[in-house]
Amino acid sequence: MHRHDMSEAEGFGWSDRYLLGQAVMDDTHREFVDCVDALLRATDAQVPEALAAFVRHAEAHFKQEDDWLGSPDFPGGGECHIEEHDKVLRAARDVQRLVGEGNVDVARAYGRALAEWFPGHADYMDSALAAWLVKRSHNGRPLVFRRKETG
Image 1 (tube, rainbow, N blue to C red):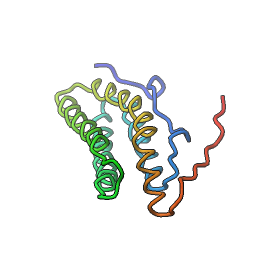
Image 2: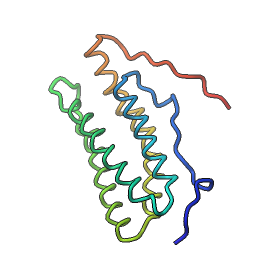
Image 3: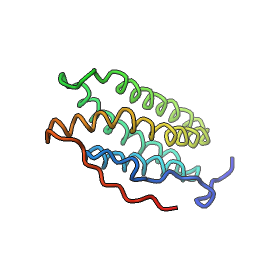
Image 4: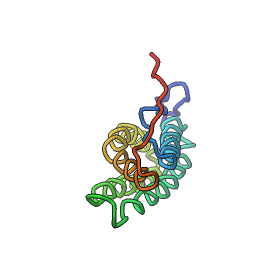
């Protein structure tokens, strides 16, 4: 088993392209990115706690969104969105079991999969939820201010 060093670890950074214009969701998504980043950068010894922190975050994050998606006036129903959340959490629990058996590399692979999954999920599923939430509370469209990307 080799120890991963911070310098060689590939992290997952926040980008304003993930902003949806709904403050609660945007804050939660920043926390999601931070949790995945911590998992990817964790040493072998830190992996179990980083994974547990991600699971705690994901359970609260997805429950909040699932409650909104379950609203009777959410257009088109949120079943697919809720199902994606369930798959991510089921996989997280499988990864926790494997990490408990000594396989820490599976947690890094899971972290990379999350980093690949999140942008599309935010773009296609969460953006519709954010737009509906903003319309419901302000009767308008989400307003997003993004910093200009450099480089």
